[in-house]
Every structure is written in structure tokens, then in C-alpha cells.
Length: 482
Ligand SMILES: [Zn+2]
Image 1 (cartoon, helix red, strand yellow):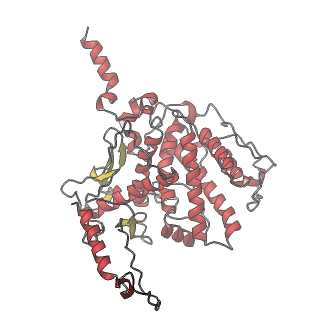
Image 2: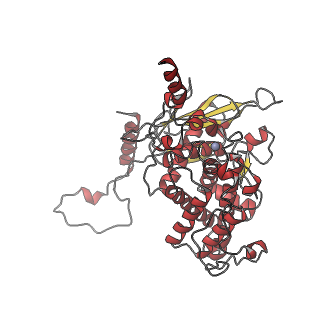
Image 3: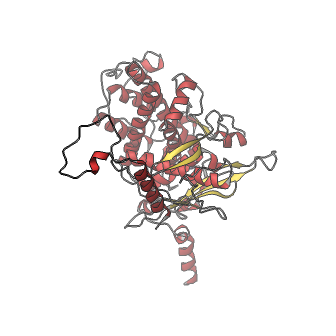
């Protein structure tokens, strides 16, 4: 019997002893029915409960107003923590056993806490996209032909100011470091940042959905989509949690362009590296002409466009629903619907060499197909056009002069609900140049995505060291056979 079965057995037994069986039910079947007395407990069986409490940092140890809070993971998690998709590894610490209540609640900052926190955030990110995937599991890149291998999570993988996802290692690795000039005790653990864990999990999930996109032989915009998907995962995962949504609405008075923890990604990590607004800022004004072929900056253009669309749609939905719904709930629903739209658009985009305009067009078409108000498409067209990603198929004059009719569901600018736009500049460095990944996260620096071409990566399946060294090995084979 596993520990879980014991738990359930105990719960059932406990439940049974607490329920009193009404006296009249104990009589013989032939006895006349006694008149019903006042309400009494109904002797129905109590279903076995699954799920565990986890203590996690809601944003980042430095975002003190949110701090560490309990989260509920509603699926069965074994000691480790381990479940069917994710396992945790920390030498000398794992498997971490649940406490007497079956929960993974440990003192913040302890090794056990780091394992539980990291597992829970990875698990929540997977669960969020599975919801958008119709409740169906999203395969990791190696889950083909019946392979069900888990992803391994290393909360303290080694020393360094970085974190990464590796298809070859089937792993998410989070490093730790002491910022320059600080005492050795001031260690920054990247695994404690909700944003960084969500970001790297985003890379892993996108590699499962679009295995050809991580290759460095695609245009810089394809690399930008990967980096951006990581950041958007952190933003959408924050907004999928009612306490974070409520804190944000109160902090910003429901204006998403107000400075907040939401748009600042990886605050503690960024500050340690001298960036006061976190590692990057989703609420930026960058345009494609300003970012060249630098993938990290290119990613911020896409993230910024999606963030602006989120703020626009939220303004519209708040005006529409403010008399009938709590602002936090409107935000949760708005963010969830936009996350679903981005997810569906990415799934529908090309398998390799995808460009921002491809995803934008899929967003427009899927939005129309699912019956969103026309103003949603106006927001999408405007925001991608202002960033110089696409042509302005409908005029931007109302947006630029601050005269957009933000509350008019049918507003299109000129009466046309266009769902197909063009790339503004086909010769942009973000489409034509080599990818400069020097400022990206650890995932984008991995050699497996630098040297293995997009078509090979797109075929899915696990990746071996020999695949990465293929060119070198072929060369040696030729040299040694002479
Ligand atoms: Zn990244």
C-alpha cells in the first residue's frame, strides 16, 4: 500500500466514525416509516480528497506585499515532490516527504521549501496551459511514441546567475549566486522567483508544442517568440491566481499601465544585476526598429504588444461589466481569455521560422471565429502596428490622438474588421539577420538549440549529445576514413 492509499483509508475511516446513522434507518424494512423529524445529518459517503497544500512565494522574495502563501495543488503528489509529469531533484534533500497533514509546507528558504515551491510553480504553469488545451496534457518534446518521461526540476542546480530548460537533459535547472559586492550569505536563488520558474517552464511547454522554434537557425523573431512566451507565462500565471489579481487591481486602481509587480519580471534577480525594474519590463514601448537582431529585446516587443492588448481589453471589459462583476474577477477572466487566444494562435502558427505577423494573424482570425467583439481585433491590430510589427490595415489616428472609443464593442476605426495584416518590413533585421542570443536566458544559450537545425528539432523526440555534436562527429568520421 502506498502512503497515499493509507491517507485515503484513514480519511474514510475518520469520516465514517463522524457520521451518525439516523435511528429509523436501523429498523426492519417492514416497520412503518417514522415521521421525519428536524433536519439531521445525511449518511452519504464523503469522497476521498486529493491534493496538497504548498507554501510558495507568490511573486518573488523581494515582493514583500505578497510574500509566501499557501497554494492548493488539486492532484496527487508523491514524496519528492513527484507526480506523473514532474519530478524534483536536490542532492541530499530529495525525496522531500510530505508533513503529517499530507502537505508540502516548509520554512521559507529551507532546501525542502525550495523543492516544494519550485515544483508547485512548475505544476501550476503546466495546469494553466492544460486548461487552455481543453483539459488535455501537453507533451514535452520527448513525449512521442508512448514515451511518458517526466521533466526533472533541479531547484539548486549549481552556482550561476541563470536558469535554463534543456531538452537533452529533460530538465529545468535553477542556479544560485551571490551578487557582486554583497556578503556571501546574501545568496539569490533563481528557483525562488515565481517569474523565473514560470518563464523556464514556459520554454519547456512551448518546446513541446512547437519543437522547431528553439533552433537558432530561425529568424530572430522566432527566438523572440520563445523568450516572450516565457515572460507571458509568468504574467498570465500570476493573473490566474485570485489573490495576485486582487492585489494588482488594488495596487494599480485597475490601470495595468501603472507601475506594479506584474509587468516587472524577476525583480530580485534583476535588482541583483543592477536593474531596478526587474530583469525586463513587459509594459515597455519598444518597436522593432529599435531592437536590431538582439533576441531578448525583440522578445520584449512582442511581450509589450500582448501586454498592451491585455490593458486595452481590460479597460473595455471593466467599462462593460463594472456594475455586474468584481474588478479582480474581470481581470482574471480577461487575462485567461487572452492567454487562451495567444496559446491557440501559437499552436496554429508555422512549425518552423514563425514570425510575429503569423501569430498576430492567427490571433485576429481565432478571435473573430470565437465571436469576440470587433474592438478586440482593433486592439490587436493597433498594438502590433504601433510596434512596427505589422502594417496598419486600419488607421491608427484615433489611437495616436487618444480618441479611441474604448467602450464601443463594434469599434474598428474605419468600419473594417480586418483579420489579415502584413509584416511592416520584410527586410527587418529581426527577420533577416542571425539571432543574437547573448542577452537571453540560459535556455537560449544551450548548444543543442544553437547547432541542431529547426527541421531536426521540429521532429520531436529526445535529443542526444551525439545530435549536438553531429557536425563535428561527421567531420571526424570523414577525416579518419581517409
Ligand atoms: Zn528564456
